[in-house]
Image 1 (cartoon, helix red, strand yellow):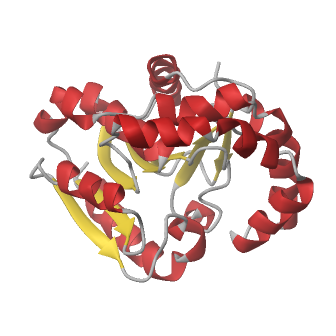
Image 2 (cartoon, rainbow, N blue to C red; image 1 turned 120 degrees about the vertical axis):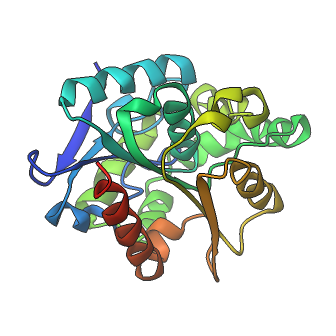
Length: 248
């Protein structure tokens, strides 16, 4: 069974927060939403209690479906960033009846063989660097993590192997092969930063091919904008969530 953290009252509307690769507390700046919502943060492959697990999308997807069903809610919202954004796209495409809305933050859905090859070739050195405590502490501070969140990250990243790191990219979602996405009929929002790579902005355009998915570019923002640009992002999310849950 998948391990998860939760914040807020279970009686409130539930939002599933799917973190980015290797970054359990991606949504540290959105945990404040727990005043109005019940937040559920599963430990996805490569982070937290699942840091040593290779990312296998199909297996993880089924674990998340079981988790959602065990919550016994009529519908839940889902917000995913990066790798978690890809997973959010897959979840709503297969079981849209479980969700009231979805937000995809920097979901890369147009992998090219050359780009994937480059990232996979760097898996050895990238995984090794994740074992450097001083580097993780620096990264955590930059991302506005609390000291306990930094300590947790510094501990679990020691378990990330080259195989785990490689799986983040080798199993990237190709939206062109997910035909069911086009038939999803629930409110969706896709956001990426203005300073992100071209592939990420192309992904935005692909997600927008479903007319129910609104897209926007967050000005002066890089890939880590959930942690670094919460002042601009959170009001957008709050408005979207309020509107989508009011439709239930």
